[in-house]
Length: 312
Ligand code: UDP
Ligand code: MG
Figure (spheres, helix red, strand yellow):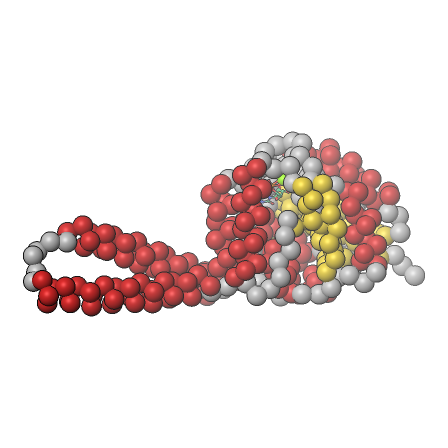
């Protein structure tokens, strides 16, 4: 019987400094797990440094290394989508190219896969990020969990093993505004979690700025739920009710005590408050409208410069 092929998917953006580490780690994985055939698919997400040259060098030394060169920088979500389109394995393990994800977890993932789990995700038992990043990420997961109807695994990133069935399912999800974390949950399949300790990044810098993280968070919310729209409806109803009660109160007091033209502060406060709520609600509608706009254009998610040096 021929061995099963397992692909490791590495999206990489300006990771040239990490290639000695990638080389070492990937060879160790392949050597320690000889029961499988291996494919290492590296996705160059429009790097501006020598990441592509490093990929070519790895492939020249060892044909099991493959690379996909995207036409520009699309961001990690799209880089993963492209990678999943090109992996050939019976399963794919998604890892960060900075090797923050420990390879010692891989044998455990493989044995869970053999037991029949189709999505084996790695869960950070303690991420060594700073306090702010940790608490905000935890709070975010909690909110997301509450407003969506799908179970979302906490402290789980993209480090996971996906069976062919999950890969085929994810390939059908062509939305360009992606939040892959939610997609993994959305597709379902038999899931199993493994805990691990997150490594510190050894070379280069993290590519996520605060603004990008905020974007990702808003995207995650608006991709999976219309709860914010519902919230603005409820808020609108609530404020209208209060305004109505206040209106009756003013009518009665005016009838009883006359109308000494006063009340500048109350008018100001009301106008400002309502203005704020209205802008907020319009913003929420805009978020969804923007998503519709982007999806209706129906553009392909990415363009490929080359696959293993061949134009496609
Ligand atoms: N990445 C990518 N495209 C981007 C940004 C990042 O492919 O536009 C890759 C990056 O090379 C790395 C992974 O996504 O392999 C995670 O990125 P990073 O380490 O910067 O994120 P963090 O670990 O800080 O969350
Ligand atoms: Mg990282």
